[in-house]
Image (cartoon, rainbow over all chains, first blue to last red; front, side, top):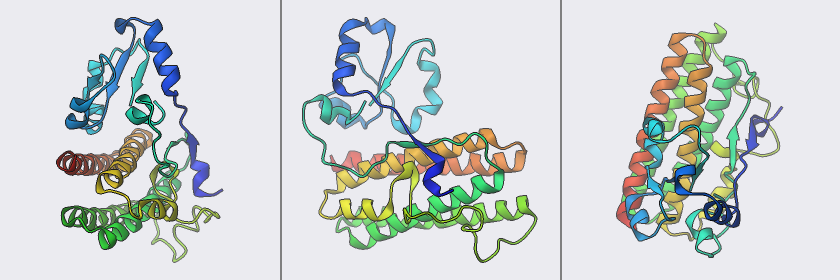
Length: 73
Length: 182
């Protein structure tokens, strides 16, 4: 058993899948999270995305509704 | 979302090394988890040391030098913990005696190969390298949070708690430098 056997690929959505999902759903139906830096967020972000810095996610989980799907980028 | 905002905007992200993997092994002995963490820290240490010696951005060089040092401390903490769990001084073959070396060479968090990442980093902008490092540290942070939950005794959970807290600080330092360079 080698070191890579301890890892599995994480499934991700393509931008097209995210686009379709956002088009079909209302903003109240999902959590959309931008984990980049504030400057990157200011330069442009997905409509309605909430900025939560990557190091803060674990401490701010309560801001996300666990009953809704969460999209992170 | 695959490719992040770059892909969303219709641009093609330059092929950064594979980091889309996460630690996933619910049934593992503590000694094995510790050896795995040690190996990943060693991979990160090698990556950061090499960056510290090749980058020209002085602030980034300093940061990577400090991060490499921090990974060394993590390795020492993990070795102490291994000794406590196994009740013996790690043999000279550690960690290969616990996790046999594979063909993949040195690996960092997220299953990223050190050699591949260093090759990719050649000629890249500091911001791109910082972004890659952020994905690495995010994976380390995630790994230690998972290990903390998996550990049954308080002492080992505490060790992983401290390590996850430090990885979080690394994330903050890398984010802060990235913010300055954007």
